[in-house]
Image (cartoon, rainbow, N blue to C red; front, side, top):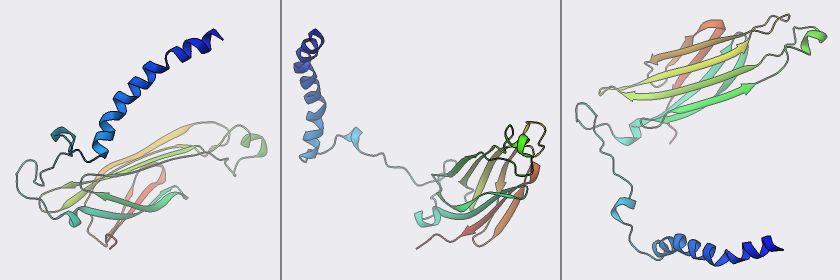
Length: 184
């Protein structure tokens, strides 16, 4: 009972604190103009080093069909959308058994597989290029032991709209990129 009384004694302070927090929000909701530092900052649309104007905004959006395989296994396939200022990232973690192993071996070994793929654009003043980073950690296929391997790619990619590029890493890692037109 004493805990309840102590809790109820704090109610006036809690209500006063809530009113202090909510009062400015209520004032903004009633049409009070935002203060200067509350407004979003405008970004200048120029190149950082050359101070020349950048291309129009619709030309800064990109769509890619992506297919990632590891050995003979499809790890992920789908579309990624990115812009000059925002890259795209995909991450997955897969765990299943190795069907090639015997029943007893399947109880202690699995095919854990973790994939992280990041695609970013960068403006080269004349055109856009892309940077692909892919990290794939996977179990080796031997049934009698539990060992992992890591394969990764970190490469610049020059790719025009409609073009397909396939990049390969260790352990059979393959990333196929197809640049598609931005949907209208």
